Each structure stands twice: as C-alpha cells, then as structure tokens.
Length: 202
Image 1 (cartoon, one colour):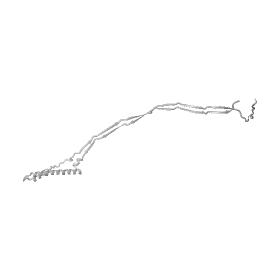
Image 2 (cartoon, rainbow, N blue to C red; image 1 turned 180 degrees about the horizontal axis):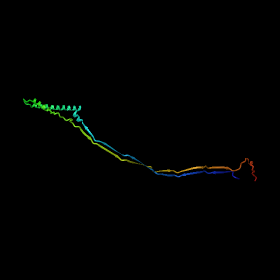
Image 3 (spheres, rainbow, N blue to C red; image 1 turned 180 degrees about the vertical axis):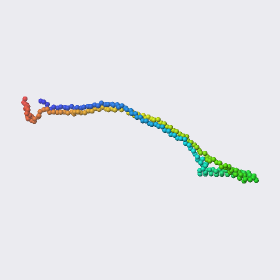
C-alpha cells in the first residue's frame, strides 16, 4: 500500500548584510588673510602770532567815559587830601603867629606857588605805550608707517566615526506543503472500477 499524502517542508531563507565600522580622518586646513593698513604723513603749522594792545594808548589821547569818570574821581580825592593838609598846616601856623605878622599875605603866596605849574605847551601823546606780546609759532609733524595685518584661520583636523551595521532580510518564508498522492476515493468503495472484494474467510 502506497502513502496517500506527501508532506514537503520549505525552510526559511535569511540574507545578512554586514557593514563594518569606519573611522575617517579629515586633514586640517589653514587659511591666511593679509590686509594692509595705510599710514600717512600729516604736518600742522601755526605761524607766529603778534598781539598789540593799544587800549591804554588810546585812553591817554581820548579817554573813554568810564576812564574819564575814574580820573575825575581821583583828581577830586587828591584835591580833598591836599586841601585838608593845607588847612591843617595853616591852622598850625596861625597858632604860632606873632603879633604884627601878615599871615594872610603869606597864605596867598603859598597858594600861588603850589598852584603854579609851568606850561610850555609841549606834551607827548599818547602818554602810554602800546603793549606788544607775541606767541611763538609751532609745527607738528606726524608720520605713521604702513601696517600689514596677518589673520590666520586654522581648522583643526576632524575624526568622523561611522558605526557598524547589520542588516537582516528574509528572502523566503518557511512553509509546509501537503500533497495528496493517492487515487480517487469512491463512496461506497464498491463503486471503484478496480474494486476487489476483501476475502474475510481466509
């Protein structure tokens, strides 16, 4: 008697791809940038400055209103001092006067001599000189040389690490194949054209 069923198994198929780890080294680079700073020459000169002040000289010829008031005030003050001294001196002389002495005539003569000022008509104008001053000249020279600026830009070397990788892929799924290999089944068995009765007596 032959088997009626044939069973066949299909195994699983797995494909594995492995990528190894990598450590990559990148070389460092350096850039140089050069810039130039221009210098220059600058010269500053200031000539001699002459200062002439003629205020006092002009006031000696034509005084200003303020200066005239000051002069008149000083003259009045001086006249009052002189009169006070004269009256004091005459009072002392009157106290010491002798009988018969003509003091009035002497006082008049003294007053005439004090007020007498010889005037020849000659006067130097202006009576005050002009004030002259001067500031010395100056010269400043500034020179600056050209400059070269160096700018280094250095990139450090870098290390790049790529980790390993394992990739699994299933190319064929597992399976069980069941196949019937026997002939047709007849119900009842006597319907089979090749049916042979079973001898149960033997």
